[in-house]
Length: 410
Image (cartoon, rainbow, N blue to C red; front, side, top):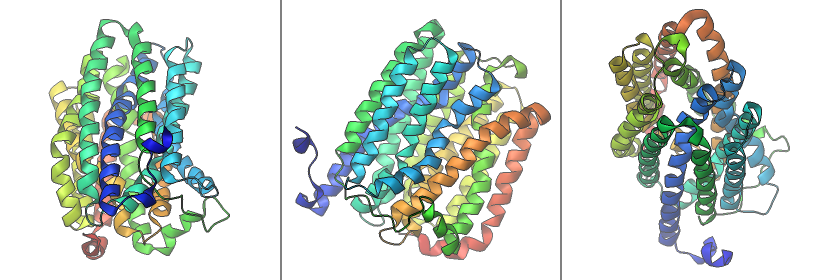
């Protein structure tokens, strides 16, 4: 049964490898969209509104996907000591996600709910280097964004739809949340099946005994390392606001106290709809444009959106900020997932991606904790101003890198 579903890569032509990867990735993207809506909206909303969670638990839930990103560098290292292929290793964490979400769905205490949600979303992110490595192996050079954008388009469209449907259910009765989390769990299982079906090579053997040995590429490849530095500043300014966006429009502290529908519209439906509409546009630019200039444009779009989101309690201004964030995420999703395919030498895509994902994990893990601490001291509006300033700084730092970006086009 498994051998019929999963064809060995060596038995397929290059075109068959590309098409099978593409079809499996469409399924992966669809189920990922549902899981994405859970991370963006439902997990924190339930923790805040149903369980009345404190700041520590809220920050841990918000940081969970990024903890997984950091740990992915360890998973990739130890996976390289096995004889398994990349798609098998990509599928295993998704199975763990499914099991944990099913347990969390029916947990009766806040701490049990939080523990299994955190493990679930750690596992969801830990598989990212394997997926990007498969793209690098299986998609034609210069066409990575064209193929990946289709599954991403499906993912964000389904995220917007599932966010709307799920919030409508919670609006009727928040006690229905176990049904939503059960559905999320089964989507994780189906996502694992889709990843497992991708033809792939064995995981590249690591040349390092140290599991963090890939980090050396950040200073050995100076251009790669410098872009990572600017991305760290920009990413931290963005990621520490992610849980605060939910908190800002949910908690009584800020005077908005939005309903489940309002939260879903602002956090998921508006930005995900804009992402869905603009992904093809950004995908074409990614394959053809100077990558550094593209990154600068995206940074400024994020800066404008975050500033508008936190500068006012007016729902229309918050909605405009959310829309701008969605526009930026449309291009940011493609750039974040694929930019290492432009920088990495042959055979090192997974290694370069593990460095990028791990650093994202560090800033994403620390960000919510620092964000919840900082917002209590300087307030939500000043968080927006500070984040905008950091994003502009990261953009200015990229100016010397523009000449190098010309060589990073298809």
